[in-house]
Amino acid sequence: MRCFLAFLVLAHAAAAVDLGISFNETLAGFFTNGDLDYQDAYEQGKAADRWIQFSSHIAMEHMKAFVQDDQHAADLSGRMYMKGLTGIIGAEVSGGTLNLFNGSVVDHQMQMNYYVPFKGLDQQPYHLEGVKHVKGNNCTHMFYMMTTLFIRVRRGHVRGEGTIVATGIAQIDLVRVLELVGSMRVVGNGTDADKMDAITEFAGFLLKDVSADCFNVSNWKSQFWYIWASNGRNGFLLDLIARPDTLELRMETYTAGAAPVVTKEYLSIDDLAISNGTVTFGSEMMLSMASCHGHVKGLPVDVTFALKEKNDFVPELLYLAFKGLLPQIESYYGTLSNATVAGVNYQNIPIARTTYAFEVGLEIIQWAMISALSFRDSDLRIELVGAKLSNKAYIATSYVFFHGTSYHLNDPLTATTRISTGGDIVNNTRIFEARITKAKVIDITVRCSAPVIQFAELDREGDTTIHTTVLGNCTATEAISRGTFVSNSALLEVKTKE
Image (cartoon, rainbow, N blue to C red; front, side, top):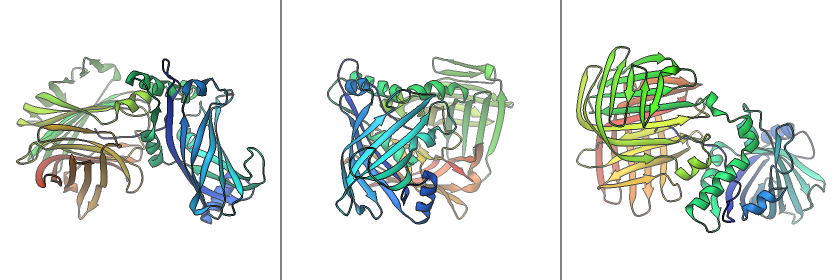
């Protein structure tokens, strides 16, 4: 699919087995010495480059006890880094606690309270006290509240006591949020069902008041279905989009050496019907698992295909645990047997059918995507998608078919997909580059490009714009088997701020 993203995590209790949950979290920010207003302290500290960071491992080894405990206390350990107080070497943290929503919920106000003891460079004891204020009925600022910690550092190791020596704000950015999600583990022995119960119940505990008030996502859910195919000379991409209040048919047709043509048609949301994998937009368009028939503003679409392989880009465990916060992205791969799209005929070429839904964050997420389904003299297929986290950082997963074997590389612990360039423009050409690795099995570097003129501007979502072509040129180098393969019919896409 085309996107990817993420939010927060955690869970409640396993019904049959006393399992636990653990995860890692890193927060960073700025502080000012003394006791003053949090925001003022943060701004002054930022100007003076007085940084603070702490990386923690948080564990609830016995979920039943954790849930029954009114304080909902989790064990916290890790390392503290604080300019001037610990220096760059940091200080060990042990015996800390994180209280998740301890006490009652008052006016939808919940708190996460941190107690982080450490020793300074002067070998004196200190502790950080931090709080996240989470208002379950404030959807607009939910991400900020869940990722922003207001901190005070005190002398001594007695919670709530000691002279306040520093005040500030620390935050967990989107990169760290996704790392937190990826670090979540079930602690203890149990069946897969037990572990799934632990995670889903914990997620329900974490989001109980928030979800009731804020995450009624039906108000802004957007669903996408699309198919695409290319023979290197011509190609098409057809999107069926169900937004909260309208349906959109969006067809892009491509011809080598010419600017793409984008055709859109809008329909009533009442025209949407979904049944057994078949999506129907009134009398205008029908997309099943084997064909697509209809028209977009009078332009005919008649496609027949056979799908064979499927890939989920978001691990099922995480999707089920945080349904509503993470998109479920599914791609199917196969062969287009025959098609006529906007007057152009296609036969016996690869095709992909993808579906995904965004329930939060569509307007702000940026991504890059490479989908190369045909390489000369090889059965190699590559599809990868990454969510942009910062200027040059992505979190990505991928699918590879090579030498008759499918590789579903959506677990960052066993495989790595690194996007180094995601659609940057160099000399009027968009450049994409990524490396996919799985120890002793796969090591592929793929470099792709296409002239800017070959990219269609599909849509604007918030202050981001989607640019796509299906005439991308890719060179894939496989280091283990020492092979190099070329494609001229790849889908390349970037969603970026402009």
